[in-house]
Image (tube, rainbow, N blue to C red; front, side, top):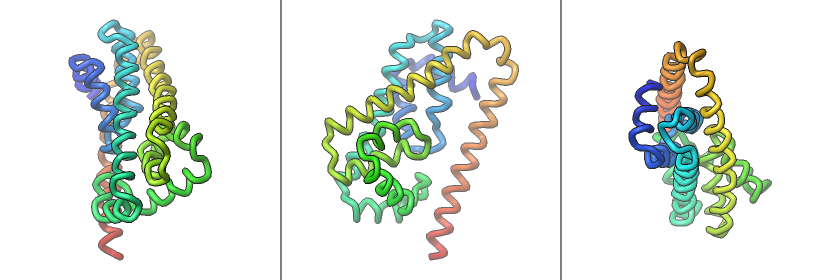
Length: 202
């Protein structure tokens, strides 16, 4: 799986990285924790430019965050929560998740958006309360870009460092990646079923 994903990123370059990072904000089983280190590793081998990879990762991350921000403004609190209640299981989201993100945002606001871009599970949700609370687009994009840049730089740097150790880890890298991705898919399916089952029991 590592070879498949890395070859896909290598073929598509920064555009492929941007697309994957955008999808990461929408479709849970695609984690930035795998995408960006892989891209950083390829940059270290000379297959890709590290600056282009970094910019693609940030652009995709910000674009995905903006989609949720736009949806929150467009739908408003009531309609968005109703939509999450009806269809959120496909995104492994519940009304309680969104309401929890709203409470967290009200406590932290600007720092919440900035730091939220680096916290798994919060990264996607933090855009929703920012939109519902009426945070200005310029402020939202600035904070989101700053937080995403730090996160993407850390992950890309981790992959870049990995290249120097590749001979030591190449024997188990692909199997470990398969296990991680398989676990993420199983977690996603379990979450979809659990949320769907919970709605049926209500």
